[in-house]
Image (cartoon, rainbow, N blue to C red; front, side, top):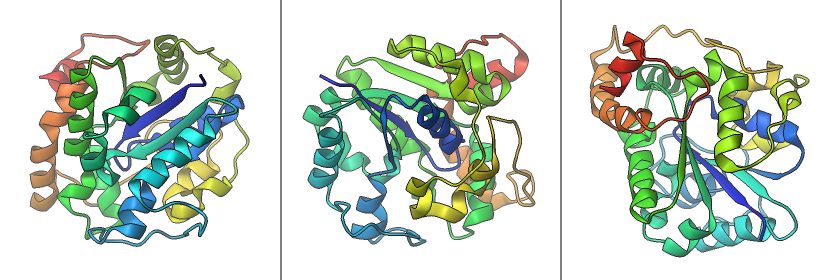
Length: 256
């Protein structure tokens, strides 16, 4: 049976750069945010509209699950998606959870929130998504299934070590060449083309590509989001896998 590897995450988590590494491996079918169709096309809670809609893509939860599992009939599948798109369905679906290998990508919410706000000033707390990510993480662990957690700062600070640790945790080959690529937009990113401009011009994982005018330091509104989301981030950070473990004050504060 071919693997189905999920990278569950939240928006603005450097997840598209992570996905770009997996694309460069060339040994898996890559699906880009398949559950976004459930939230942005079929649902009515989003504050923005999906930029491109594939008329052939399923928009209901069972159809999207079948789409993912069907893609694994011929080769292993990797997909990244936001738990906020589907978590209520997902945490109740033990059959699908059992079929998937669950990995998680988290990012310091101070950075993720500022990045999201820069793109969409109407962003809601629900759309920030760390609470839903943690609920899925808890559900998977409660079922006794293995989890792999990666932190975006580790990924940016030590991409080779972190991706290697990720591959070792999954029992898949580490391919060093996958860490570099030619710049260019990927067709599968069309659904959120304007949101992936940094990934499209990148040739590898680099640190601090974004600069923000509004942050948790100068906005009480964003600070309130941060205070709400931080505990979920800290709980998952404590379980992260990384080739660059350390006990510095910054890392200890994140896990506190």
